[in-house]
Length: 355
Ligand SMILES: [Zn+2]
Ligand SMILES: [Zn+2]
Image 1 (tube, rainbow, N blue to C red):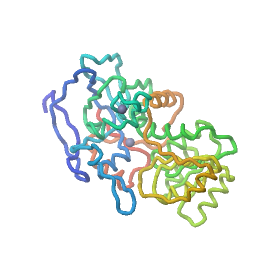
Image 2: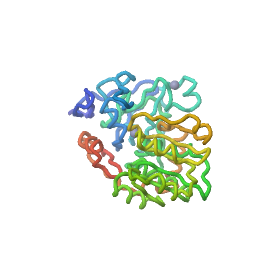
Image 3: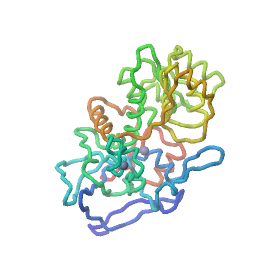
Image 4: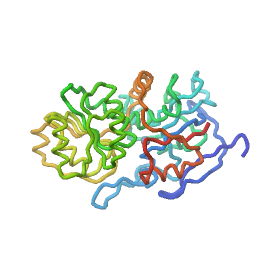
């Protein structure tokens, strides 16, 4: 490999192996910025993208190839890296590791103008629609997506781009929680643990965590949950309601399966919210009069905005968010790291290391 070449790990068919590919290093033009990847988180959405679809229930699938995702795909949207080159119209002053906001939109539609680029109908997301951080280098379209991380630990900071941001944006949707109210967190993987930690730091007094796995429930207790339950037992609903004193104000569902949303929708008090983040899939049926009379909101939450990203980086500088296991693995182990995550073998989070 010459100095003008770099290695990336794309896949060229859905569910196929990630391959080691050597390419010519691109030269940034216009507002583009070339970033050398230091760290890149291996996120559960990478598993879904690699599978090629979301499960819509009843055998139906939402296929990514019909959604503007073209092969080959280089995954990786939780990137911390250093600027190495910039186009003639890119103003960059920053040095040292920085966080890359990956949820790039068109930048000009009304959704983007409102500051919600993550919800743009013409997305150009790094690691999804554009090459991401399972690579030694990544091209960022504009310096505004490069966020200073100050003195944050770079490997940990990478997690702020997706799991951190997704969790933060979902928690902001909860709104005010009074001391006698409870928030239920469904699923104690990376996002769930981060949510429990963040809720606890924000002063929520009664955090109830649900997970099938005993060891994940244990981790949930360690990071700040007040009660934990296995949601599949027959009396789960009653036990959760008892722990909440009937005052569950919001459910944050990081699984997003039929069974979890069905359970979650029954938990909030009147006026409460069910915030669905997980993408496990399926569909739900629920009586419409109950939606009205209980005045519940069922809210989808997808990643977060650039302003939220900056707010989160500040929050993370003031609080130690990452009190759960974070393991680094060499970049070249990207495929096995992805497979381990898909098979549920990862506790906490894995971050690829390309220093
Ligand atoms: Zn847009
Ligand atoms: Zn992600």
